[in-house]
Image (cartoon, rainbow, N blue to C red):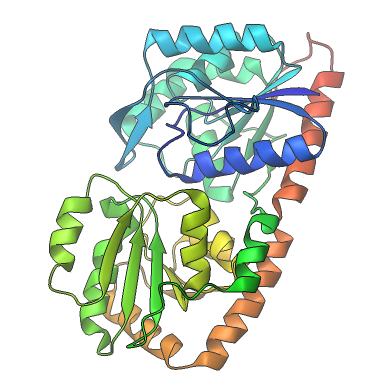
Length: 376
């Protein structure tokens, strides 16, 4: 089957949607499907574009969205390139991630030459998103032949702006287990600090991700410890200034997937301190697949992803986080218990099973007559 995956976020910027589209595309190809990914951003340095996996649909700009900044390509040039490349590819189904997002997703939603499957990732609707949903409600519901959401929060957000979808399928994000298996078995110690354990935090550096809370917790921890921060974002300079007087904190910036995964696998504990706005915490599952104990804030998207396999703490509470880390880092048995539970949880969320679920949906919409009603 010829499948086009359309993403609206810059391919070069770390993010949960980009990560999920990338892993889904790779797995669909392993299952024998012919896949094209359309996304904003420059072509990557890897072989993905050369192998036909990725075509870029224009440069991205950073715009405010849902308490964050979204790297999207909303201009008419990206709109036109998206439609031209879809026409040249001749897909049998077009899978649009975040269908209401201006740029490639909205172009594909409204004018795709093939049936559209829409997947909603976003948790929380701001005023602009609700307005867009109001304006596009009719066309969006008519064009999507199947609708999925990665979590209950994503479903609630989609239905808040577009109305109920009785046939919507909740299909969670998945983790590429094969990508982490070798790292888990080798357990690299490159960044181990003999003076203390290693913590890792990975994500976009912005206020809602809660890194400031983790830095405050580092001050309260009261024991030698090293923290590596992987990722970039608009709050980086402010956070680096906050961390300047804290021993053992390193900001590594955005890293290639494999290098970031190797660091997470080497850590004694992966910390996810986000405050809000997480639909489904795929970074937790990736850390679990890497064989690393996870401590995460107790917000809906993280508790859903964790599935009981992470140590949760109240969001925004630096003292509680410090105590959580103090206990975990002094209790190897508890960390090993979390690692075992995490591996089992990650196995239940394999991208292989997620991809198979999407293939079933693709086949159902392709088999339906083009004149069939939308997923309403």
